[in-house]
Amino acid sequence: MSGALVDLRSDTVTRPSPAMREAMARAEVGDDVYGEDPTVNRLQERVAELLGVEAALYVPSGSMGNQIALKVHTRPGDDVIIGEGAHNFLYESGAAGAIAGAATRTALSGGSFGDNLLAVIPDVIGSTIGNALGSAISGGRAHTALSSPYWPSQAASPACSPER
Picture 1 (cartoon, rainbow, N blue to C red):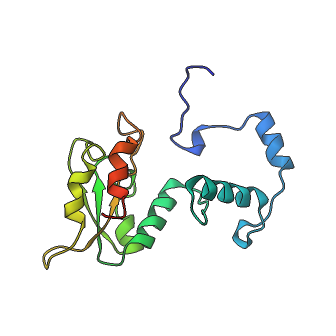
Picture 2: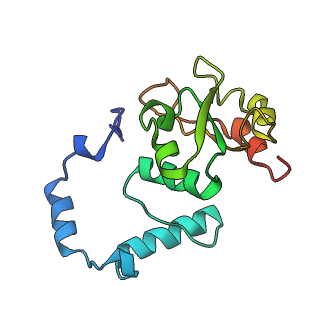
Picture 3: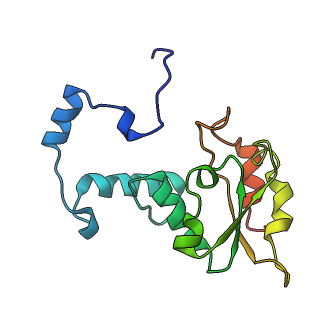
C-alpha cells in the first residue's frame, strides 16, 4: 500500500478503472426497492452482521443517511444538538427542520464537540417551557473540515450507553 491519501470527498472526484467498469458490466443486478438486487442485499446483510443489528439499509449518500436518522429519532419540535464540525451543520443546513421538523443548535466551539461529548448530554435530556425536548446528538464529523475525521471510541461510547 502506498502512502497516498484516498480522496473521499465525493464519488464525483473518482473515476472507475477499466477493471471496475468491466466488473460493473458483469454484475448481477435487480431492483433494490423490491429487494431484488443481490449486491445491495449482501451489503446490507453484511453491515447488519458487523454492527450486530437486525437489519441495515443502504442509502446513496451520507446526507440522506443523516436525515433519515434524524427523522427516525426525533419528532417535530424536538431539538438536535449538533457539533460545529458536524457534516449536517456545515453542509446540510436547514434539512433537519425541513425534513424532520426538528430544530438544531450547536454545542461547544472550536471543533471540540467529540472531545467534550459528555458535557452536552445534560443539554439534551429533558426540556423546559423555554426550550424544546432534546432528543438527539448529531456529531458526524465532516472529514474535510476538521483535522481529525472521527471521534475516538472512548469519547463516543459513554454518550451512547442506554443509561443516557
